[in-house]
Image (cartoon, rainbow over all chains, first blue to last red; front, side, top):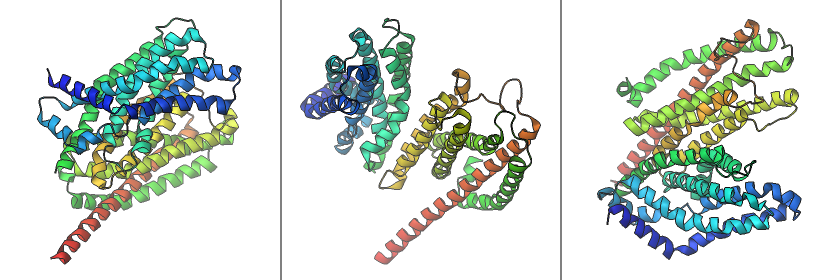
Length: 224
Length: 243
């Protein structure tokens, strides 16, 4: 078994053991969307046009909510130091973290999306496009969240500070994602979806290295 | 050159020598620019007197964007070469740049209300400028977000570097999208498209406000270096008392 697989298995087990934390993310997602009709009013004519944008905003905010402490336990118990000594490069460790976080945090949210779309009177013909765009979008958000979590590791006001850093970076994903989720001509693979895919590809290439650079600092200074 | 400046005491000496000339030049240029801009230049045939807002708006916008490039460069120098002054410069520049980004948005709103009939429109240029302000605020928050101040340096440098991606979006937003904000008039292919009567005060203000930015940054860098020196002196004193 390669070191990467070991890391992946470990994180999946830990994630499963701490699944209560991830349930909080799902609950946050559901509650944000429940608040919308309370604020806007239960009228389907108002809710239908904002269903897709609100689902995106809720997905963004609840993805962030699960991130604040993704690395802190590993830094505190010395796991990051061990990874730095091991043959597993830190960027790969970051990818393993992001992948497991996406599987445990985002997939339940994706499964709950059709239900929420129904409750917000969304046009069901857009559902496949929305789900596909959300798969790419949540993956991109996960990578951004990993950057934010690594940068703010050990900082004082973790959650709020991270939101301030990550949300400006998340805007391209939000713009293309929301556009790709409600295609005008009914097709699923739109130019916006491809641009969202491009955002994800760029993030996949750079995010692990940025996060690793931030983490290696935390690790060297806490070890000193 | 960079090694030469790495000594804070040497940097302070050079900065001290530059400081007062820069203050004088900035005051003279901004004074002349304001005189021509506010009193001795024609109103625009379409915009009327509101065109004078441009003499503050455009330099502020240039400084906000160029300042972010400088911030990103500081981040790069700090991460790659661990240049000790890069961190000081980054911390000094971030609030100054944020102030100019804010000034850009506010003066733009003052101009937008009479001209477009709205304080704010969700146009690509305006929105990307707002995001630039958020990046500045993020860098400031991150640099000061740790209990040991020096631990914030590297995360802030990384974020400054990542945020540079937004700068070309700000600059070229008017070309890539069909924005309500007018396209570039100075740095454009085909030459400057402003009449000389308005170009002179604009260039004076551009030069003057860039000097002003340099003055603020030097002042803030000196303050940060003095503060660090004070802290280390206090620590040394406390250690001495303990013995």
